[in-house]
Amino acid sequence: MKKILGHPESLHKIQTKYCGGCGHGVIHRLIAGVIDEMGLRDKTIMTHPVGCSIWADLYFDFDTVQPPHGRTPAAATGVKRVNPDHLVICYQGDGDMAAIGTAEAIHAANRGEKFTTIFVNNAIYGMTGGQMAPTTLLGQKSTTSPLGRDADEAGMGYPIRVAELLAALDGTRYIARGSVNNAANVRKTRQYIRKAFEAQMSGIGNTMVEILASCPTNWQMDSLQAVEWLEQNMIPQYPLGEIKNTLSEAGGSK
Image 1: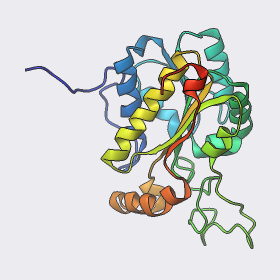
Image 2: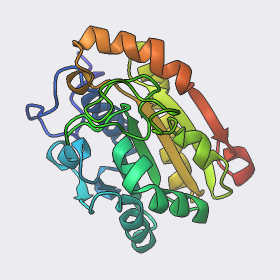
Image 3: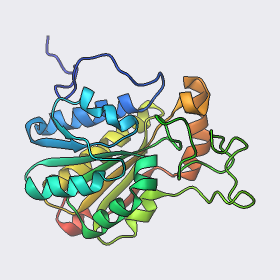
């Protein structure tokens, strides 16, 4: 019998440390599957920072680099410039990319650094205690916004749409936003990841895939409630789809 599906070679066979219902495990599987399909396991390097992303090196069976919190794009820039024939992935969470690492992310994207960012947006700080993140929705409760995020009276500001922000920069070539809330969106997100990786390996500029994921532990919900909350609240705030696609103009495939 022909085997058509199995455990990705790019993932170690170990028990997960992520909380039940967390989206990181599904996202890891998508990344590993695409890398295997493209035959790039021996030519892949991932940079991943502090936060839930810090555990990535436990699961991926290829080279990884762990920079300080927020400095992942700077590290990815150096890694890609030294290894231009490698697939370089910048794996970041919302607290990392949209807060402490915003400057690095924006300037790397604006320079057109030829790596791909996988940006996991679960609208909260995960590992450090469930604090409000730049992506936290208005009205959403966290340990630092126990009454809900308030942009006006409490001066907490508004949720940042990172994909749209980076899409406005000339150095970006492909920006998409997917989700792992159901099978259909998982398949679409996989396609976005594949496009971004193919663009990078074709020598095209900066690419990013933002992925909406749930955090049941810090949202204080069970897994099913968290998926429903994501669908009802996050997707309207962060619309899914390709935000920017200039691959045909840049010589890539659509």
